[in-house]
Each structure stands twice: as C-alpha cells, then as structure tokens.
Length: 121
Image 1 (cartoon, rainbow, N blue to C red):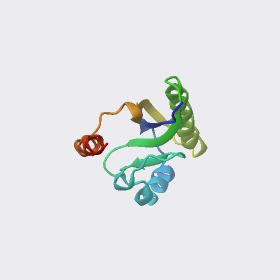
Image 2 (cartoon, one colour):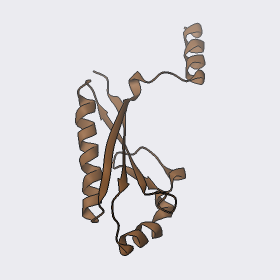
Image 3 (cartoon, rainbow, N blue to C red):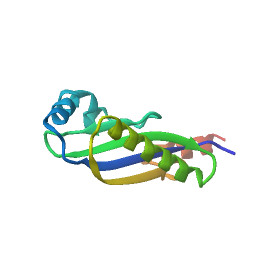
C-alpha cells in the first residue's frame, strides 16, 4: 500500500482566560502567528488573540488505508486537547477537519506538469 499524507485542522476558541493566561499567550504570539502556520507532525498552533479568541492547530499525519484518517484525526484532537489542558486553557467549540492529500484535486501547475510528463513518456 501507499502511504498517504493527512492534513488535520483543529479549530476552537479560548474560553475564559485569566489575566496571566492572556498575558502568556500574548507574549508568545509571535511564534504562533498565522503567517508562520504550517502542518507539522507535532502540531502547530496559531492564533491572533489581540484580534479574536480563536485558535487553530495544524497537524500532518500519515496512513495507508481510508480508515487511518479517522484515527489520525482522533490523535490530533487528543494532542490539541492535551496541549490546552497542560496549560490550563479553557476552550470551546472544538471542531476538526481532515484532508487526505492523495484525494486533493491537482492545481493548475500540477496538472500541467503531469500532462508534460505524460507527453514525454
């Protein structure tokens, strides 16, 4: 079987934050900036607390079968919840979305490259 890459996004909102928690998040905001967001195996957190209380975790997982995406999503959700719980951050409206990159439509450049490769064969 072929290994597939899964992109998993976990979104939510911070719950009632204490003044200390808010200050901690704001002091670390630069490393969690949306402009540096990436899908990583350990998960990347991004937020802009100064603008709104929402956050996004991005995870990159792998699997071989269709059902592996469900297990990967559950692991990502658990990792996000653990990260929040370890720091005592309350959260609400947690939602996850997973994408199997092997099923994603090709972009214009990818289609052109695939067509050129087929013409050369």
